[in-house]
Length: 548
Ligand code: 16G
Ligand code: ZN
Image 1 (cartoon, rainbow, N blue to C red):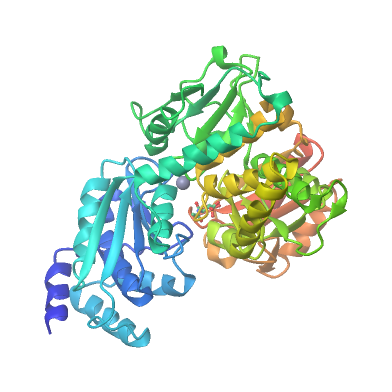
Image 2 (cartoon, rainbow, N blue to C red; image 1 turned 90 degrees about the vertical axis):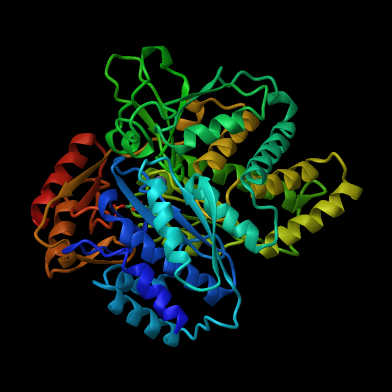
C-alpha cells in the first residue's frame, strides 16, 4: 500500500551505521552527531505515530544537553509536555536499531497493530520540532522532518532554536488550547515575574540584595534566550556571559560547574562575592555559585538542593498565610498536600532541612521522569536533582481552589496579606514551567524570592550547610551487572556487595554511601557523604574498591 511504499522509499535514505546500538535512556538517544541521522529520522516516525495514538501534538527536541558540541541527541515530549511515556521506550529502541528498511517497516506494522493505531481515519499527526545551537542540529532537524513525513497525514512544525523546556512548554500549551508561541512563553514568564516583584513586601523593596546577577550561558541556547527576556525589563541587572562565542559546554555550563565545583570560563577575580548562576547546554538545569575571594577558582556551589530549599520555604510560607484567614484560624475546609521530591544525590543536610520545615519528602531513582511523576502526586510537588534540574508542579484541583480563593479575597479582603499570598502562588504557577525543569523560569523565580526576602546569595546559601561529599566514577566490565533497589540506595546484585558497602559506611559517623550504574556513561557512580571531607573521600574510595 501507499504508506508502506512511502516508508520503504524514505527509510532507504537513512540506513543506520553498522555496529552501533543505541538505547532510549533517561535523556533520549545521545551519541556522536555523525551517527545520529538515521536515529533521528526514526524518532521522527515514532513522534508522528505517538501523535496519532494520542490525538495530540507531540514534541521532538534535538539536543545533547551538556555533552560536548560534537554530540547530539533526540528526545520526545508527550502531550502533557512531560517525557515520552516509558511504555514506548522499548519501541524506540527497536526501531532505532532496525538494520534495514524492511525490518523497520515490519516493526512499525506490528506496533501499529499492537497499539491499535489507525493511520487512516484517525486524527492527523502534528509534531513540534526544536533544536539547540549545535551545528549538527540543522541537518538532524531535516532528518526528523523526513521521519515525520514518512507517515501519511503527518505535519512537522519547525520551531527553530529553542531551549528544551521551551519546546516542552509549547507542546503542553498547544494541547491545552493556550497561546503557545515563543513570544507567549516570554510574555508569560515576564508578566508573572513582574507580578511577584510588585508584591515584594514594602520593607524589602529597596533593599540592596547585591548589585547584580552574572549568568554563564554555557555558550548555548539559554544565554541567547535570557538576553531576549532581559530586554523585557529595564530595571533588571543581569550580565549574561558565554553567549555563544565560545565552544558549547567547554569549561562552561551548569554540569561542569556542579561536577567540578570550579568557576566557568569568563569568570574572574572581579566577580568575587557577586551572585552568579550557570545554565546547561539546553537550559534545563540551573545552579548558582559564588566566586571565592582567594586565588583558587574553587567556587561555593549553590546547587539544585538549595534552589529546592528556597522554593520550599517560600511556597510553604505563602500557603500558610492563605490558610490562616482572620488572623489565627486555619482554614480546615481544604488541606492541600505539599511534598518535596529528591534523589539519593540530595545532600543529607538538604533533606534534613526540608524535613525540619515540616514537609513530606520522597526520593526516587535518578532521572527527571521519576521525580516528575512522584511530584505530580501532590497538590504542590517540588522536585529537584542536585544537578539543578527541577520545577514545582501544581495540581489542577489546587489551582482551581486558588482561583476561587482569589475571587473570594479580592472582594472581601482586598489588599490583605492573604490576597497577596494567593496572587503570589498564582504567579509562581505561571512563572515556573509546569512541563519540565526550566533554567530560565527557575532563575526568575529564585531572583523573585531573593527580592521578596531581601536576602543575598550568602544568606540563601547559609539556609543549611552541606555535608561534605564525594562522587567517583568506576570503570567496570559490565555496569549492568549492578542492580539497585529502593531508589538506588541499595545494591541487590551481585550478592554480598551491599553488605560490604554497609559495613564500610558504618565506620564513618553520619556516613552515607551508595553506588549505581550511570544511565549516560559507561561507568558505575559512587556517592559518599560524611562529616568531614577526608572521611567522605575515604569512604568513596573504599567503596569504589569494592565495586571494581
Ligand atoms: C540524565 C537525566 C538527569 C540525570 C542524569 C544522570 C533527564 C532529562 N536527564 O541527564 O535527570 O541526573 O541523566 O546521569 O532525565 P547518570 O545516570 O549518568 O548519572
Ligand atoms: Zn540539559
